[in-house]
Image 1 (cartoon, rainbow, N blue to C red):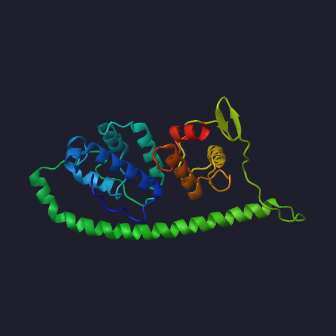
Image 2 (cartoon, rainbow, N blue to C red):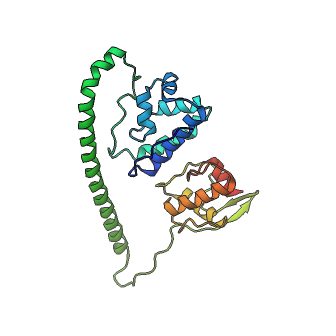
Image 3 (cartoon, helix red, strand yellow):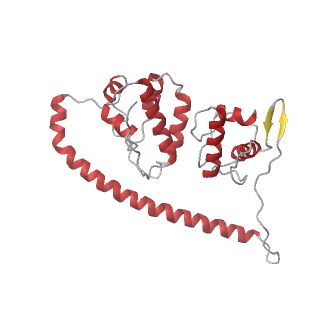
Amino acid sequence: MSRWKALPAELDPRVRQLVVRLRRLKDHGGLSMRQLAARTRYSAKSWERYLGGRTLPPPEAVEAIARIAGDDPTRLLALREVAAEAWKDGRAAPDPDAGTPDVLSAGAEGRAAGGRSLRVALTAGAVALLLAVCAAILVTVRLSDDHDRTARTSASLSPSAAPAPSSPTYGCQVVRVDGRWYGGNSRTTDTQLARGNAGPAVAEAQCLLRRAGLSPGPVDGIFGPRTENAVRHLQRRAGLVVDGIIGPHTWKALRE
């Protein structure tokens, strides 16, 4: 098995999850970077960027490694879509090799080597500046969201009414029907859920995690860290892949 370098600490958990799964598939196939490049349309250097968490791999590359490892690409492509959400604000540039194979003749690569070091240095400086700007924007957006949420709550209260404790958006009415458990929020059995998702399907999962004796936090329909930890405990208990993502197999464990 490959001895992988640690992924960047600032890497979004959704991207980290995808990269870890890709690394496992490569290890499972027993392929070197060169062998992986030979069996796909992407070079060894592209795969080093993908598996190092420096570049988001294109869907075609994700599907290619899944098929080489004998895995169903559908779940992996869904993880890639979740990871892509973390890249929408421009925190990382798209892979320049995503559309065409990274194949250079020995002579062409020798001619390109001289300018590559300068491009790497310039790119590193630009990325560092971009990360700093994005971090400042993210803090501003979160503070703005908190302010707007507080303002909406204040506006919804009558001037003469005293503030009342907030009540959960969703409830739990757990019942067993035809051998399956339901929490009263959703009847889905295959909706893909991961950290950052929200809605009735998340609330349903939180209710069923509570029923299983785990602690996902409040049943608020928000897939946060506590919900993810509870999902990991359930997956470990059920003998599933421990990735903190709810898919068909995890839904089955929740409802049985």
